[in-house]
Amino acid sequence: MSEKIKITIVTDDEKQNIEIGDKSKEFVTVTHDPSATLMSTLLRNNLIEGNLCGGRGDCGRCMVRFIQGAPLPTSLERSRLKAEELRMGYRLSCLARPKDDCVIKLVFPREHQIPIVTKMVDLSENIDLIGQKNKSSVFRKVDVIIAVDLGTTTIAMQLRQVDTGEVIDTYCEMNPQRKYGADVLSRIQASCDGYGEALKQCVWEVLERGVRQFTASVNIESISGICIAGNTTMEHLFMGYDVSSLGRSPFTPVEIGLQKCKGPFAIPIYITPGISTFVGGDIVAGLYALGMIPGDGEKPGQEKICLLIDLGTNGEMAITDGTDMLVTATAAGPAFEGGMEKAVVGTDMIAVTSSLRKKAILDETGLLTEPYFTQGVEIHTQRGNFTLGNQDIRALQMAKAAVRAGVEILWEQMGRPQIERVYLAGGFGYYLDVEAAFAIGLLPEHMRGSVQAVGNTSLEGAFRIGRDLCRGVTDGRTLEGNLSYVRTINLAQQEVFERLYLEYMNLCEN
Image (spheres, rainbow, N blue to C red):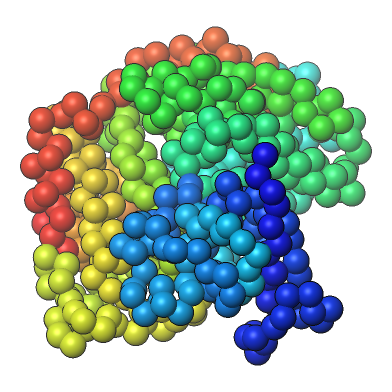
């Protein structure tokens, strides 16, 4: 076992030169194993908010400055950081492995807070908001359900009355698993590296905090159950399953059907079923909330042709004509939920990109004109200021092209129908400037006039599924049967995907 060294972390921005052993309160000292990365020590001592890129050195959010005892930069750090930054002692804590006592300053930015959307737009023209009230008489008016949207980035919980759907209380947090990585692949790797139990427990602790808050409003005995909707990886991590098979071909989940367990205070927990590794319980919940999947064991039978688009770190899409349903998913990265290094959310990025195109500062290929090509564009938003560079535009282009190609493939395979409703789900859709989305080609022109932001359909669907399960309106066999006719499209196996992806890299209406 390696002999431990001491790392002194300066907490006073003005204090640059200190002596090891100084008793000032303007710094803290921790022990460190030289065989480990600096990141591991910062995480263990709660000195960093997260390991957002999974320790790959991609996001730059873990940068520190060595005042004394800087280790030699790794080859990755040489490629990620400027020569002047390296000379000044800047390193990435996920890559740096100090061997001797040292002094550092934490210079990484605080993570900006992402608005957590818990609302869903009133879609009473499509479905009854209370729904199926007369199918069971076993519930009491005092019964309540806890619905949970277990997102990769955020966790939203609602306490709602069973009979009316009224929201009694809401509890939200950023997902604490972000310290192990911003995306599902990073968390799969973290779980495989031995952090599986920690990943599970930090979400269970959020669940318990939410339940404790809710018990100030209702008696624990009146809570009929908890229904959790999340993507397949989030649900697996919550249940403590082995997720290694989710990160490699053929991407086989341990369990994809409805799951049950006991939660805090022995409250029954229901985990919504998924469709595949890439189209999970959060999308199923959204489809349920929108009436695109019924609860009575029959196909929807609806007349309208509907498309659901839910964009975040992953982009999931589903289209149905009332008889058939096609679903797919594509990796979007951080572009739609806010760049890792920028104080900006994805919807702002789309609005800004559209504006730059109109001002001819940005061409349709995604390149900034001079002098912005060299120095970037200073952007000021309500959430903060940042410098937008060509690499930021490129990240948005890649995410946009993948999603647009996926939408086109679903539409083509459904027979190119006239789509009457395009539902944009989640926080991204809720805040999206739809005209800006059309302007950069995220959405095709033939969908103009059909787009509707519907809010947090995952949370709404979790409530409805939980309510119907508790009241005996539906059961696991029925829910899973309703999904058996859904066809999953693997975009990687579509020959046309690469051509469409390259075509939709351009930032223009098409």
